[in-house]
Length: 345
Image 1 (tube, rainbow, N blue to C red):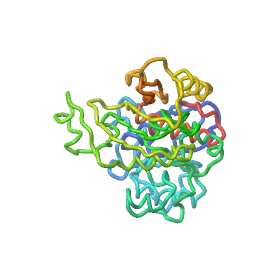
Image 2 (image 1 turned 90 degrees about the vertical axis):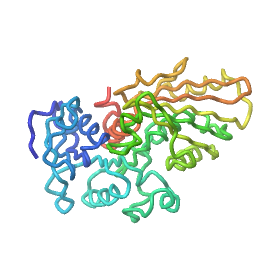
Image 3 (image 1 turned 180 degrees about the vertical axis):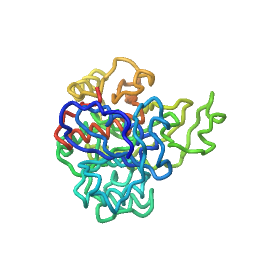
């Protein structure tokens, strides 16, 4: 692989890292974060469709001076890597993960292939699994909920961006078994739709416009329900995503009925206590805004109670940072025994 320019490492790297699928939005950002990380050495960045192009040609603002190559799964050992971030679509990611794991490589998967715990649910929403023997072996990578399980993990399933924002917005209530019905209107920029020529995200369709999509059922809903149940509140979730005319950013507006009446003061105190020690979650005293979160790994949460007793939780992230690549590196840090904030602050 052509390497133009030296990576700004701080001493001996803790791991040699591959980013597979580094031509897409999340893969390119993962390459940028690893390239600037003081303890991770980016030794390979791959793409089939854009092999031969430099990352800083496709994404000039990331300034990663590496040429993309095509990944040869039959010769993984030649790369000499310790860890990988796989930024492939579902289905394709699982097969690559299986080869990497067989070679002893720690894997952070940014796709949906290992997020769900029930194979029938996976098949309903995504089709046949690409590596069924590996299904169920990954740790769900919502760091704030599974930090101890992530330490030393070999395979991590980075959550979807919508579940990240929604679950962080509702987790303090779910952990206390307080959630009844949950309704979520989640909005994000077009980067969440991927590098696509689809007319849905064409400039002429998106400028000065916004609209819901997949209104009768989005594949992130079972992931949200799975995690709320795991935290202690098996709740029925109505989830409707929306596209906004911006490139990055996501806001989940969550409405929830409570299993028991609880005051606003008690709920706010619950959130402040739960997230007090979290390096990337901030509890605000007013609604969040997306511009404040751009290009950060933070989640900003505001919670209140309306006059009929329903909770309203507003949770904002950058969908390709905390919703994908940034959270993936946060997890990789824990997998490798590093401080989870390294390369992200």
